[in-house]
Length: 68
Image (cartoon, rainbow, N blue to C red; front, side, top):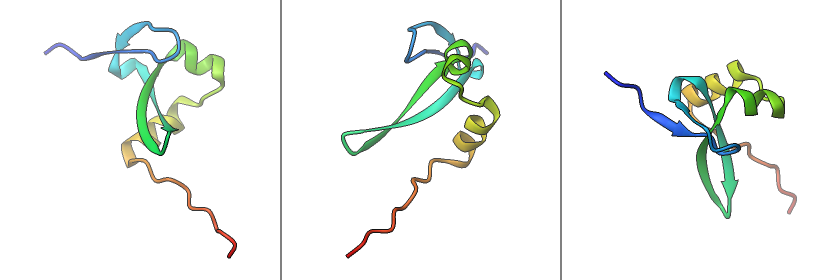
């Protein structure tokens, strides 16, 4: 079975999904999941293991304490 390939959001390289780091971005109130290749993730200083564990658990946004 062939593995799905995704496009790196930073450099545009097409790589297998297993060799990417999933990142969650919030734009205009919506949360989107984008993928970075290993090279771009290293350049940005993202730790692979932490990002993959976060993706496996699911995204839980942080709640802020608002003052009233």
